[in-house]
Length: 411
Image 1: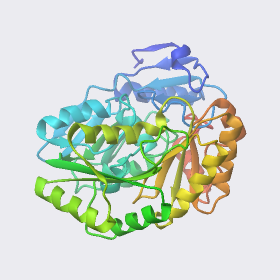
Image 2: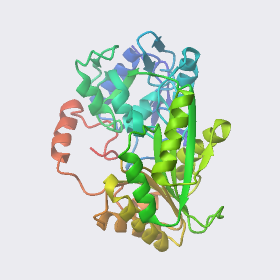
Image 3: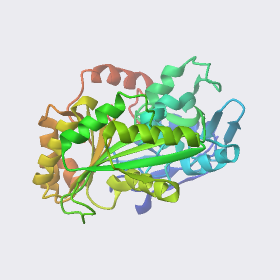
Image 4: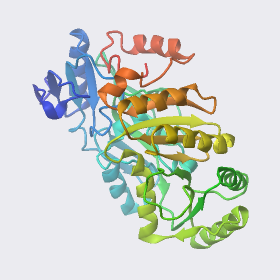
């Protein structure tokens, strides 16, 4: 079986500035398996591309022999609406999937900053946004996966119903592996009904301690937010008020439950926050998701203990000074995870990354977007973790030729 598309790579196929020698666009799982088996046999450095929205994440490659595109694996959406599950080809975009699911009042509650983000890329990166607060990451919604292994074998894990968890750990393992272990053919998710009503309360602060106290009070209450985020603005951003930090809380349920929870939040936080609904609410969260990814600047992911939120904001203020004010942050209050957007030159960006990594307040400091110059100054993944030897052993087992995303990913 020969893949239907094999062509020479061009500038539009470049991976972090490196043009691949060849590009293959398989139309089926079988063709994908054949392509990978051939690449393993010839030991070709192979990178998988979906919508290309995260193609530059990871270390800069030394060489790229082959790009395997999932663009043609986009024909399947099997929606079992009665079971609240769906099986989706890797090349289907999240935007298209949710458009189809909405016909039955259902959705896959995952945020993405990128309209062209595909299901395969979202699972491979375990990319999640504000709705992570209630629903978790893609890994938490995944109940089954079909994979093409590096040697060409097609492997199935999990199932099509929520109660079937056989082989589920393999799906969890692939989530967040950045294409280093196997290639996703399709994925099966548990779905949720679209909430009947939604409202967002945005509260502004100039005092990090007060913000953290309010966040702790809400987190300890019976309020169940759909999303609970923090935003720290740039110093040089045009001010809308004298406050530079915000808490954004979204509740979604029945209309009466939404009203009751918003009232509870106002009492708990003693806040006069702005209530936002309708199209304006959608715009607020779209801005929150996309803010770190505006054109220009490095994007760095950090993690922290939720109880250390005030200390995190203090640290952000410190590195803002280093960046001349040109640094902003959005984060998940409950999960203790955030994205920093750092503008300025690469030396400044590098200094900020080093300062973050030297801090005891944050951890898992990862450069997601950065120029090749920045990547020459800092390792995007940071120091290897204690579990790295185990993961490297797993990599050798699943990809003995070492062809998948070689040297670029966390493994």
